[in-house]
Image (tube, rainbow, N blue to C red; front, side, top):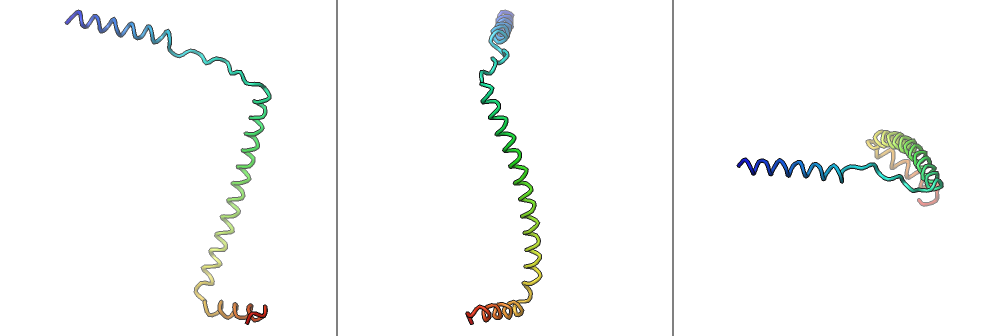
Amino acid sequence: MKIVGKVNILLVLLVIAVGSNFGCKPAPPCETSLVTLDETRLDAETFEKEAAETGRSVDDLEAKLAKKSQEVEAVKDDPERLEKKLYELKKGSGRD
């Protein structure tokens, strides 16, 4: 048993030594041209601006939707008045 324990310890030390030799090394420097980096940076700025504009647009549309939903709720309980208004609109357009 003592030999098996010593062999295990030796194996662990060997794995650690090999792992440290082939382990985490610093990444090699990136070989990208400055033009590509500038284009990517400009694209990122453009996408961020578009995302902000889209967010504002979504907020505006949600507000309009809420307003229209309130309008629908206000008139949905009065179908007779709506039918009368529709009849007047049709009559005015000549589709009576």
